[in-house]
Amino acid sequence: MHHTVVLAAPGVNGLQLFGAVTLTFFAFASAFCLIAGLKGSDRIKIQTRDQAAIWGFVTGALWVNAGGTWADWANSFGDVGRSMTADTGFGDPGLGGSACLMLLAAWCWPFKKRMAFPAFLALSGAVLAGQAGGIPGMAVGIIRAIVSKLAGG
Amino acid sequence: MGGLGVRPVGHSDPRDRDPDDGPQVPAPAPPPAQPAAGPEPQQRVPDWWRVERPPLEDLHPAPPAAAPAPVAAPPAQRAAPPAPQQPAPSGPVAKTPQPGGPVKKVASDQKRTAVRKLGEGVTGDRRVRIVAFNGTAACFGWGLGLVDLLKPYVAAAEQAAVGVFGLVLAVVCAGLAWKATGSPVFAGVFKGLTPVLRPIVTALAAEIGRRNAPAAVAYVNAYGEEWGLGPSAVSLLLTAAGICGGLWWCIDRRIRHWHWSCRWLLRVPLASALLTVLPYSSGPVA
Image 1 (cartoon, rainbow over the protein chains, first blue to last red):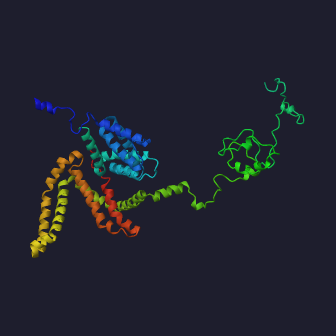
Image 2 (cartoon, each protein chain N blue to C red; image 1 turned 90 degrees about the horizontal axis):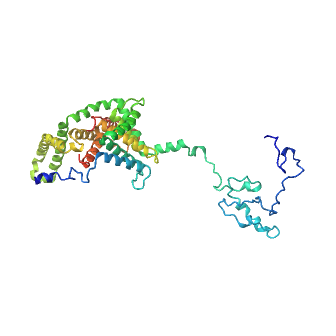
Image 3 (spheres, chains in turn purple, blue; image 1 turned 180 degrees about the horizontal axis):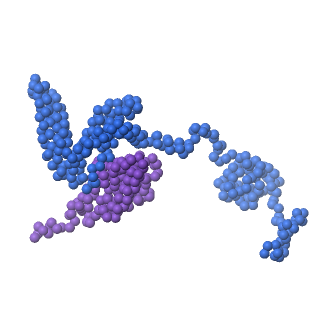
């Protein structure tokens, strides 16, 4: 009996040390931080294009991971990126090709002050990479695995 | 009411006014006499919106007989920043220099136009140059068919994780054994037998590594799968790194000092390998 009580102790569920931290919390927190950083918050500092792209990539991975409405939003961003790369008239590069093109565009975005665009491109690229798999999908898979562990999954 | 209305007393129709008759309303008293040399007309409203603080002589002009000399000198300086809403002053004030200095003439081929700024930004950006260099090389390789040549290997590598692991382990173990048997310690122990023993030990090490591939796959399956790095993913990663790293080590590393056109031509295999490996889709991430 005592053994059963010890096993059912609350707060020790995987790596979930701070109570019920869910995937939705991570999705919301990443979205809030991304928007606040892009709007010029002094606490959440997104000051370069690379930082904006990394935030966008992680946010895309977390949105898909949360599922539900968050995943719907993320997939909508992914559809935008897919249409931008697949419907250009130069041929369909495939899902992985679209993901690589979006991430490449985020990597060499030419305008220093326009940081929302690399964030959007990387977000879309992360969603497409998660759909395509392959080498870009591995980064998305690792982010999802880490966050799922943190959320006690 | 038009022209039929009755005008108030003292406001006649301006068309009927005789120019010699003078104003109906009594005119205000004429302003005090100007200093003789002042080029700027006297203003009743103080121009306090100017950057420079107006001197008191403008607001309270002294009688011309008292002190005409000090007022005559500074007006040219005071008129330097003209107020935007004022009527253009006439006379010598119009010739005062602009605040920003004289406008310089710039040759037309040196003007900073928007298109030139964009062009400088694109060609001066290192990442754009990298993408352009490798992208054109990859397109050339795709046209040659190198991408289609490499694609089956990448697809097979993902399916045959044990074989890839075996190959990698065999190469690694053989390399380590070759290094170890080349050491002076090994030569000191086996002396004359070293040239014979060295290939044998290397081959044995490679075989041991190859036979341990299933154990490595099982280890990755047990501990890497939950972090998104299962055997197929690691196998794909190893194959991609092997192809691209091997091409870079064999070709691109040795020609860094060559002319860029030769480097571009010899970059075609590596760029094609990257074009094969990076967009490869293996299905959605779980």
